[in-house]
Image 1 (cartoon, rainbow, N blue to C red):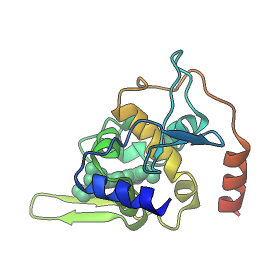
Image 2: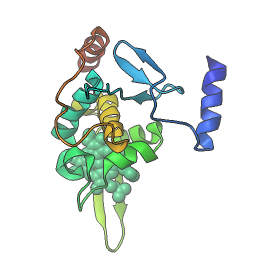
Image 3: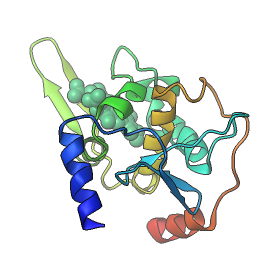
Length: 162
Ligand code: HEC
């Protein structure tokens, strides 16, 4: 396992790693070869539960600034692209810590969500949903059908929300 992780990190640095394709599934949650969360969309358009959950959480917490469906706005960038272009850990870091860019022309603030359980407990879901959008695996709007909620999801949710 350590060897696999080390190899994954080395490839990631060369920026050649496929950070989209699901390599394995655990309790209804999908991961890439280097253990980064990702989506799974069946041929008939059915999405995994995490993608669906992420759709809901994104539109509760992020879309006011980042626009519906991860499309971006005049105020904040299109996160469907960020989820593809940014390293997963960088993405998480920005959401936890926030980011402020202040220069003569701009004063935009990405709030820190590190203490907000409604975001932190569902951050992978949001990331997974945005990645599905950025990869054009799902259209705009509410996914019409989804896999059932898994035991893993419920357990993680309960322990995170406390
Ligand atoms: C109050 C408005 C606001 C809200 C709400 C908000 N953001 Fe942001 N976010 C921003 C702004 C503005 C930026 C750009 C900051 C900058 O210029 O670096 C940003 C940047 C980001 C970035 C970096 C994107 C990139 O490509 O560099 C990520 C990731 C991000 N936001 C995730 C989220 C997530 C996930 C949520 C919901 C949980 C969220 N944001 C909610 C305003 C917001």
